[in-house]
Image 1 (cartoon, rainbow, N blue to C red):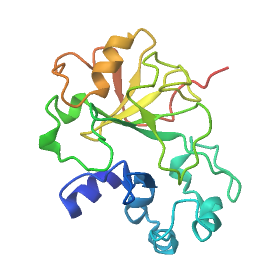
Image 2 (cartoon, rainbow, N blue to C red):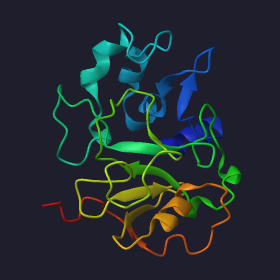
Image 3 (cartoon, rainbow, N blue to C red):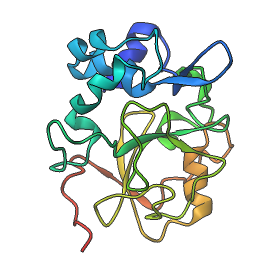
Length: 205
């Protein structure tokens, strides 16, 4: 909903990252959506005049919103790693440095992943780092790609629907779900199931 509300205000989705004058990523979409997840005070405390890990912004690291962690895992004041990432790259709904509008997603918002659960090497919630289409794994449950504390990881499509990925989804099928204009708009959701509450899944042993 936060990204949809951002779209309503700015008439496009937030960029995955904002870039400095040299084209280097400096700020994350997770910062840009803070006002839309009831974190305006935190957003206003953040300084866009320095990198995400600059002297002022480092002081905010321990204030990670619970929404960025798996349900029940956030520890106030100590949790700093996000479990929710964007799938980024020119092929995706998150091309670096620019925000799309729904009409840019030729495969259709209901067929295109916007966010995914992540359970791999730690990514700081403030860092302008996400899963890169060009280097990620497309095997469901691989920590180098879309993975979770649950047996079946979940993704959120650009239409706002949340889907549980089934274990028999092939890398080719998952790759198709990650592209915004790959031409695979039909049947890409065959091995996933829409969910109302993503917490109602079996945890990994």
